Length: 214
Image 1 (cartoon, rainbow, N blue to C red):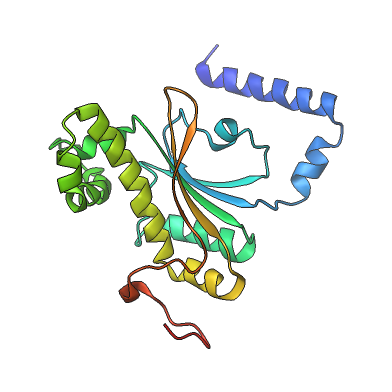
Image 2 (cartoon, rainbow, N blue to C red):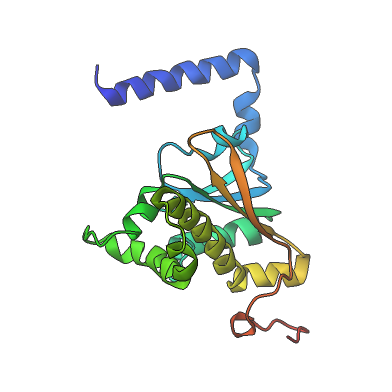
């Protein structure tokens, strides 16, 4: 049996189990989605949003990329963000990184990996910004963990710099932005940073909306 065939068989077993426990499960699931959360996570296969939070299908809208970055030129992420905020009306946007992130680890080295170097460059910028703090940490493992945390922090601020988030903050006082880090060693999530609607950011990143003066 091929590896992919095991996935298909597991899917059949999962679907049968759901119907056995609730005959209307898929009728409800297919009707609509009203998630309260947008999860921007790492593409790492060890950090599935629903499993680590105990959420059910339909509760979390998910976007994943290498090292959970919020890049202002990433049309994929921005499209997901706009849909989640403006159409689905999510109340919370979570950026969840994880200790042991390969993308963050690579950013700490001079390794040349080809095309992905352009993506990892965004994490190198975070390192450069916080170089004094990071290089004051003698233990390499602790420095690695701290860069994971700082990377999540910076992505939260990148979200706050978008017109999408600022518009929703102005008109509807949502969403709240959360920066979390998942610990593969314990299975626990660490709350790193939270920005409430209207949180202060550098005025150069402010956008003007009707009847709003910064």
